[in-house]
Amino acid sequence: MQSEGLVFDALIRWRQLPTITELAERYETLPMVLDHAGKPPFGDRSVWRDWETQISRLARQPNVACKLSGLLTEVPASCEKLWVDRCVDTVLDHFGPERILWGSDWPVATLAVEYADWLHYCQEYIRQRCPTYEDAVFGGNAQRIYGVACMGF
Image 1 (cartoon, rainbow, N blue to C red):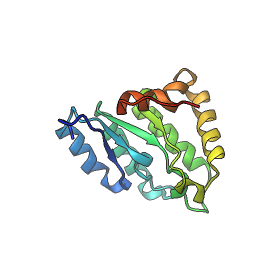
Image 2: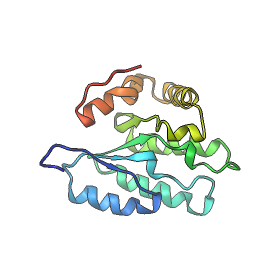
Image 3: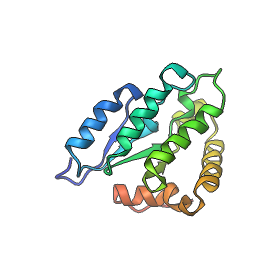
């Protein structure tokens, strides 16, 4: 993948984060994107701290970015919205907005939320937390990391 100039998208569950971290350490020039923030254990207080610790460890690898996508399909119905906010905060705190990419996860995400609602939630969150990075999170970072032109919104 490195020699071909490709990006490794890691579509994993949170318990596999140590393996991806090891891979990122071993192939430090291979661009990697963690999809769906590693599918955090929403609503499970007993292991949430483990997810945060693993996200922190992975984010230390400068070749790794994180995609805000597919989160709401992972949230149990009984779970409060606060968990999604905590997830986004954790990812932003550790990766920084320059290594965050927004993803719609369409059409799968529509099992849990309307496309427009997910987009609006993320846009408002990024505007509040890091307004100068809105263009980067919603296109520029993906363009840079994947090496492609983006259509924008």
